Amino acid sequence: MAPERLSTSEIYILSNNWSGARLILGSPNSRELSMVDMADCDDGSQWMLRETGHAGYYRLHTVKAGTSKAADVLNDRDTESRHVVLAETGDYSGQFWRVDAWGDGFYRISNLFTGEGKHLDVYSDTHGPHLAPGNCIGQHWTLAVHQAVHQVTHEPSALSSTPVQYLSLDTSVDTDGVTQHTYMYSEPDSSGQALRTTEDWRQSRLLGRGSFGSVWLEACVSGPKQGHLRAVKEVKKQDISSDSVVDYERELQAVAEFSHRRYSHRFVQSSGWWDDELSVYIAMEYLHLGDLQQFLGEPLPEDDTRQITRQVVEGLNCMHEGRFAHRDLKPQNILVARGRPDWWVKIADFGLSKRVEGDTALRTRVFAVAYAAPEVLGILTRDDFNLPSGTIDEYSIAVDIWSLGSVVYRMKAGQAVFEDCQQLSQFMAREIPLPKERLLSRGASVGCINFLESCLVVSPSQRPTTDQLGKDAWLCESPLLY
Image (cartoon, rainbow, N blue to C red):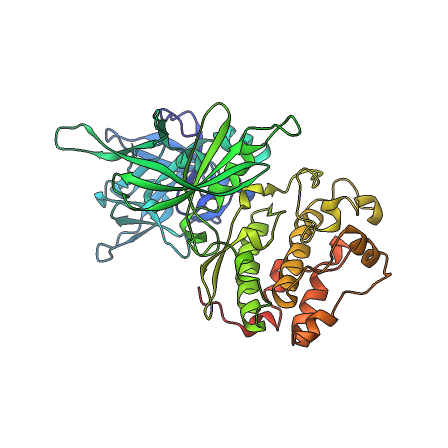
């Protein structure tokens, strides 16, 4: 969490709203600054603030370099954006930094040399730190006390993490069921008062219902987004059927992680969340074409299947790189932004995702038998492969590879790869082969069948990674259009 007040006696970790909570500002060598992975946090990415002779300005030092070096601005007045480096400490205006609260726990960092019109920012592609004008999401910084960062790193709590806080909406619901959100602007008006605006949303119709709760279509009836539609997912805080508490904090953590703009082409985006005593409500992007299941009345042509598969593989790769497994990939959780001939799909319900930690318990929900891996259904256990209890990564993430293969089979063959658990058990015991005749009758290529066979391997450790699948020759025949 962002501290209420900055202190010269604390050590801080600096993260950025554009690049996300996993990347933090650090110094990989004695001069350069860049955004580095939180997992690589060391004394080169731990920052100290020291007062200067200029009121309201600090020097920024890393613990590694100490006070002998400070963050400085390259002295090049001819460039619009100026790079930031570590330089020998001196009485230079480029080393005097102003850190101003910017609302919702964020700070804006400006420099005496470049003036208050430019702020510390990150490039959208390389995430390189620099000073630039404007009022951009990349200029929203969090300064977290180092001890608090370690608590989040080792024992994540979504409600206390910055990305989740940023998505929290100031919400009230009136007696007519209208949901109102209040937004505060960071810049005050001419009278010095904070500006605010409100939006009113009204439920339109039920989109779906499951064990977790319901999904409703809502329309904005007043405010800047009047006329817009959204989907609102209600997650019950307690599963009444099992009398167990739902881990909605992890749901919010996954939603916040993959709602950054850099993921918008692969994941359904969230505009925020709120809660009451019984439920958590997550406002999501509404895609009027619905989910992939609605397009599977007939088997899809192979090129369509390949287009969709490649986009899903890229999305899963983003999740796996972040140590998340989806765990419930199926056609109903792949939403369609654009149909044929140039498909564009997005992964949804990634809120069911669990960050890969410890001895991951996979059988904690009701999964679709047609798409769930054997280890998720409980047919296969770690003991079947003599896996030690600490083996987590490949085993947990590999469930998505099996589900991907099952989805691809469904798209191409027009039916599920296995009709029930009995058939799946027979396949696992090698009593029946993978049913390829359905694929062949639909004109599936050798490349397509090979791709499926690599995914639908019983042993989790023998399934390919998403990175390996992304280089598959069959898959790469289709370009990434979005």
